[in-house]
Image (tube, rainbow, N blue to C red; front, top):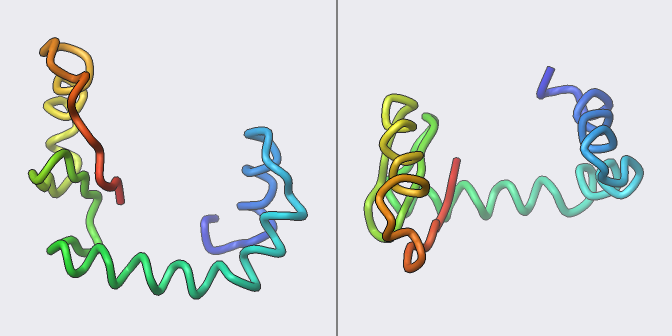
Length: 87
C-alpha cells in the first residue's frame, strides 16, 4: 500500500535505503517536496497519469513505455538524451 509510510519504508529498506531517514523525511520535508514537485510537473503540462519527459517531448500513459525503452536501448543515439522527469 503506497499510502502506508511503514510499508513504503519497508520497501526503501529492502532496496538498500535507510528506513529511519526515509520516515523522518516523509513527515518533515517530504510533504513540501511533493507539493513543489507537483507544481513543477503541472507547469510542464503533466497530470496524474504515468508520464515521462525526454528532452522536450512529453509521453503520457504507459502505452509509450515500449517507445521510451526503444529510445534508451535500441536507437543508438541515447548518449545525448536527458530525462527531465518520470512521474
